[in-house]
Length: 132
Image (cartoon, rainbow, N blue to C red; front, side, top):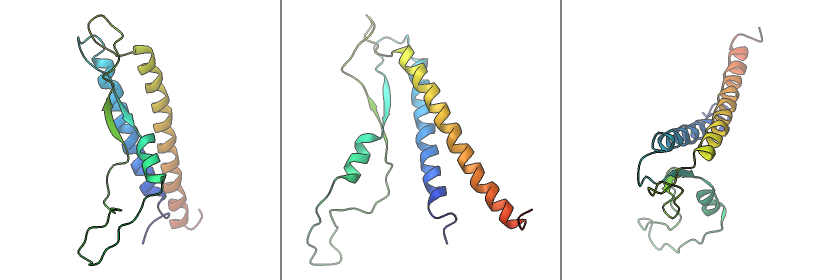
């Protein structure tokens, strides 16, 4: 039995994404003066496009054959390094204004997810208490 369909799982994955993004941005900000440090970012759109693009299926003549379309659960986001730019003379490419802006956006996103999750649990609490 799934509670609220897959909403809780989707919110959980979204919180994981937001948490990883927050750690990545905080790491970039902490290394703003580190010589040679290259900023990192959490990539989601590329993975989403891969998932949405049509894929082909292989012909399986035996049940033990591994299908091309895997049902494995893997994270739908990755951390990548932006290694082709440099903003400072020391090879560092952290743009502190962009990082602070991204941090603020991510905090708003995270808070909205938490509010939505709390709303789901409040509605469950209302049902358990019989509408009181």
